[in-house]
Image (cartoon, rainbow, N blue to C red):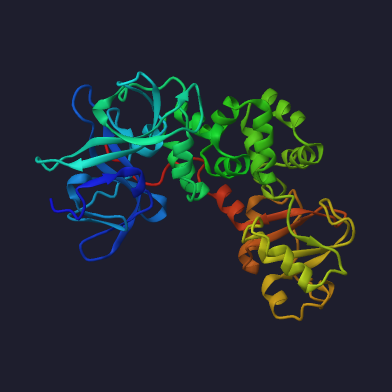
Length: 415
């Protein structure tokens, strides 16, 4: 095998683009597969590459013809079935980084920050070096970092009782929440909770929204109740309500008691509706403005990066109060219309009164027909007295139309 590099530190490959010999991009590297051995040097056997639709596949290292800091080139036919880790394999980023080992020269505990592999005479990639951090005992504290030979440490193939996640968190910092969720789903339960505990509240909230039901229920059950309540508060209210409905009733009740009263009240309201109704699917935090707000005010609201693209497509105009449940609903202003008007124009003069909102009891079938009839990405939900309760977005509708296990079933798996 020819290669432009004969020594590589694997954590640095995360996110590197993978190409076929014709220059067509296959995907991006998401992890490396290491086989740990008791006496011989660990061996790199392949890469986990993310291709279209967030599918992760296994690319054997034997098919890699070139590696450098900017690209990896593979040759031959690549199996596109979904990757599933085998028992003898270790994921570098997800499982090996932050592992605690003993430095033989001093007996000191150190943690692994990166792993270096080298192409040997038999054209195998073997682990030759470890980039380690000194000063690790129990709780991690920052210390000196240096490179040592793999044979200068012991315990590399032994699982840690309580493994940190700092290096792992740093390596996934730029990933989307959905990508982190896909990574966590592939991990053993122990490693999944170790990583979750070190994610920031808002980041973990985004990841929980993307995880399959079983995984997120398990994580919330294992988190400290105060931490779990804080994270759920950072979730979109509709996703938080879905999660709480999946938990044992006593755990859900305990979490609601630990949450801020206003946040808890929104979620209790959502839980009162049938899951497959407009009320059960809606978010209680759409963009709402009073009639005397201007186009400039509206654009400033939807420019907020925390507002999803679907919610940013429409602004709802209501009488005071503008927090849901609002005063009387007056109409909807569409994003494109706002872009065509002078900044000082009042939003009350631009409302679309032809768009008929749905009531919270409306079933999924009625909601989907309304979306199709008006070519919408969001739909207002009002009660029988004309108060705005929230909005249903197209992504929520799609989530409820797909099978419950759609996040897990993205295609065939390799045996």
